[in-house]
Length: 142
Image (cartoon, rainbow, N blue to C red; front, top):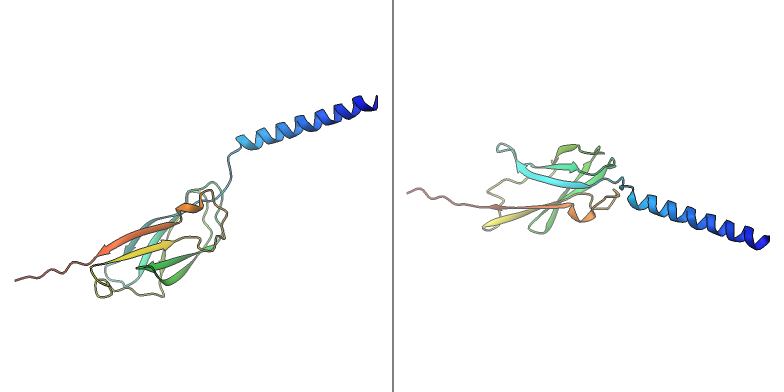
């Protein structure tokens, strides 16, 4: 009788483990997913702006974005929490970039990286970086 009860108990544990395991495989993950969708400047200002979006299914907690120009760190920006589907325009207001005067050479590569310190648990950690190249054109009028 003891062996039968032991096997019934073992069978119940196996069935519960299987059911729990299967249900967790089909449940979608509730995670945030931060992406940068745009980098821009207002013509009358020397501030770099960017748009950050949470394309995930959970709220993203407050985090930090970094600005790099030609691979060199320039500034950081504290970003407040973002609800799923929410996007917001942010800026690196403590750093000035006067284009074209500050352009080094023929172009500058501007990179913004969201969630630099991995503070937000995300569905995709590899899509947090956005890059744009700004070309400097010198127009000579004769």
